[in-house]
Length: 225
Image 1 (spheres, rainbow, N blue to C red):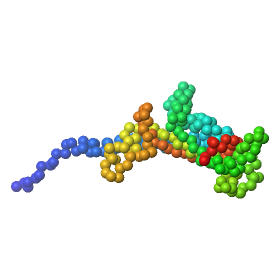
Image 2 (cartoon, rainbow, N blue to C red):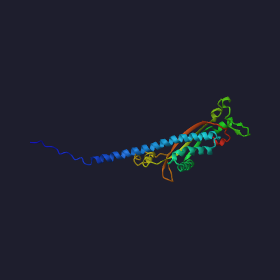
Image 3 (cartoon, rainbow, N blue to C red):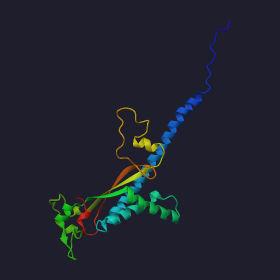
């Protein structure tokens, strides 16, 4: 007599279940990776733009208008979509708008205290923070906690609110996805804002730049408090 055998179970539909499990997770990783790459690209571009803004401030007596214009120039490659002249002009105009609405330049140093301590009357009769013959000036630290040499270091912080354009990944990065809102440990990201025009969420990213002043500073109101 042949032994009793259990008929094999049918496995039709198993691959569909595996597909439904693997593909969404794989697409999620692709979207998040793409958005993170865009954030890294934007941070690299912002580092260059912040240096350009600091350099413009160093050669123009910390003129905020010149610094903002240089920042927009540095951010232009981030917004370019075509290499032709029309595309570059459009990117430049968009960079001007982005800089005006979503970028901020903060002067960290020098401070107004350093200006008041080391200011000297210039050839035109105006007071300014001098930047000539620094190697031969007294290097003692004064009441402003810096010497005249360090008072000529311009340090700025640039904050740019980057739009997150990848669907779903922006919600995950923001911490606003319904997948991440369960439980008591959830807290919405306070640093994230939503742009009212296009609806893109924007993530503030920062960059710092330090350069030595190349011109005297005449207006202390441009400096940090």
